[in-house]
Image 1: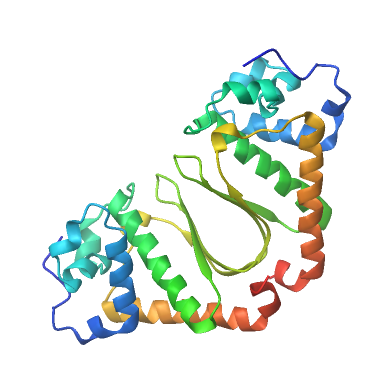
Image 2: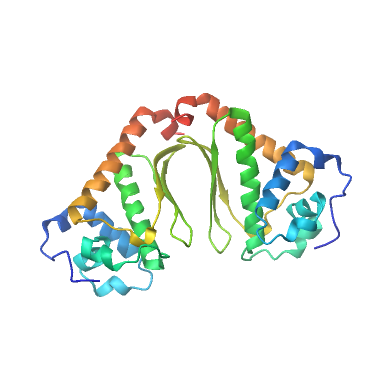
Length: 155
Length: 155
């Protein structure tokens, strides 16, 4: 990877969504690699600038760490949805070894988020701002769906 | 395994649900092992009599073939639901290497079937009759749910 993209002083590191994502990334870290890492260093690989993307082959299989980042991301999205609607939200992720799959978030019997995953080995966001915007966007769409179909979400 | 439990003359082999399951089992058979097998032989391992269960350890990891049977089963259930409601039904299966997981069938944005899987290495049915009854039971429950929440199933 090229030089670090997030500075330790970045104001966005205090954003609750970013904090939640850091918590989820650390939760996936079963070998304790991140124990001595600062938050900015933990979240940095989620950001793929143009330069970084250029360094990743177009076709490739995702490694375990990349898949754990995808899981951490959807865990953070689920927690955000949970906080907003007060109902349990469960992420369901299926990724083939070739990096294709599906990510869903389920509330009750309602699929509140359903996304086709492709090229998971290139999973990332242009900037930290874009990452936060994306979590906000998909969470509020999910909450809209829950409000529209509360009976199914409470099943 | 003990001796074969299903005879080639079993009337149930003509049952549309059993036929669908045989189709799905053959579809999972990417190495062509079943090409020379009769239908009764293909479906036979889905039946776990008391004797057969006794031969399987209580704790164990499911092998690839057992997992493919679970997938074939939920594919058959999904197809049955599809035929009854006229909407696309998608199975989503997550199984850990230890044999725990979750099986769902999704129609639109509605989770029409949601089952916790455990001890997948012991996946099977007491008899072929029980297997057919189970597919009928879970499919009609799913169709009831679709009828009650048609708007979400059509999303």
